[in-house]
Structure formats: C-alpha cells, structure tokens
Length: 256
Image 1: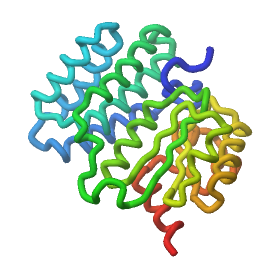
Image 2: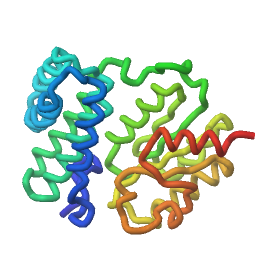
Image 3: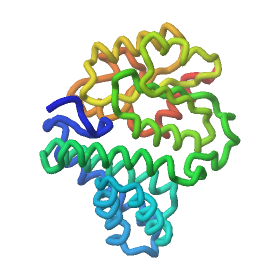
C-alpha cells in the first residue's frame, strides 16, 4: 500500500481493530449527554449519512448534510469535535480493509476538510477566556506528513479554550526553529501518524529545541498506537491525545 490517501487516518493493519468501535461508543455516550432529548440512533445515523454523502464528488452534498444536521439541532461545534474525526477514522479503516477505493477515500477526506472550513466560525472562537490570553501554542505538521485534518480540528478546539494557536501545516524542517521561537509560546505539539519514521520525528523535535529550548514538546496523533514509548524515543516531553490534558501539562511546565 502506498503513502496513505486518507489524510493520516489510514493505519497499517496492526493498528486497527477495536479503535473505531471504541470511538463510536464514546461519541454516542458523549453526544447523549449533550443532546439528551435526541434518540441515540438519530445521533449515530449521521455518521453513515456523512460518509455516504462526502465520499461522492458533489460539493452540494456538504451543504445538504450540514443543513440536515443543523435542522435536527446538532451544533457546528459538535460536528467538528465528534462527527468529522469519527468519519475520518472510518474512511481510514475502509482504506486499510480494502473496502473503499483510493479515489473514494481521497474525495471523502477532501470533503471533510471542506466541511470543516464551511462550519460557522463559532466552533473555533473563544468561549471563556479572551482570545490568546492563555498563551501561544504551536502545532506542527511537518513537511510531507499528509494529515492536517486532525491538526486543524485540534487548533480550533484550543482556540475555543482561549489559546492563540499557530498551525504549521507541511512545515519544512529548516523553518521549524523559527516557527516556535516566540517567547510567548507555552507549548509545541507535534501531530504524527504511524507512517512517519521515528528518526524523522526525532529530527523534528531537535529543530524545536533549537528554536525554543525551554518550551514543552508534546507528540500526539495515531503515532501513539505504535508499540513503543514514542515520546521517549523521539525526545519529546510527553505523549497524549487528550488536548485538555496536554494544555494542563504545558501550563504546569511554564509556571514560574
């Protein structure tokens, strides 16, 4: 199989299995708390509707599925936080399991990106703290690493929390040090998948250290499904996929 066509959501067979089922269970339980009056089947049904609509090369499908979900009362914030990531994961597993073709998955991921850009800006606007008052966060998707969808969602979530987030997609190695060099930076997050060699990720972390020796460096993404201590191997400070826990870790590290 060639370099993944799924924006980093496709994983080698040893990395798939119960992950999608677990994610689906979490989505269902968390959404039921947000929408207690909506039948659980209705909440989950939109996953199938989204996947069916967005794997077709018709931009009107994006508008239609969004209108349907909004009319049912589902907020754009929850579409970004819950639905888009799960559909992306399902596309990835469909590619790995040879249940979906290259063009179908590529169209699906492209449409998920377009849907994210179509959402109302409220999904990534500060809810409590004024914008940027909690510090600057840099998110790095290195050059050649084709999985910016998850990083884009992460950036929006942290902006909603009140952080000034700088997202560097397809960032060349020789630009990383400058990208993270601001003294206001309170954390650097590296998004990676199992496709990236660990020695390459080690080089990325070294570039971050060159530009900002004191900032905490965290690694996240599906790369954490590898059977090793990824953060220790590449020289990062921590590894996690819980962005709120990541922000808490950064806040503790930079406190005087």
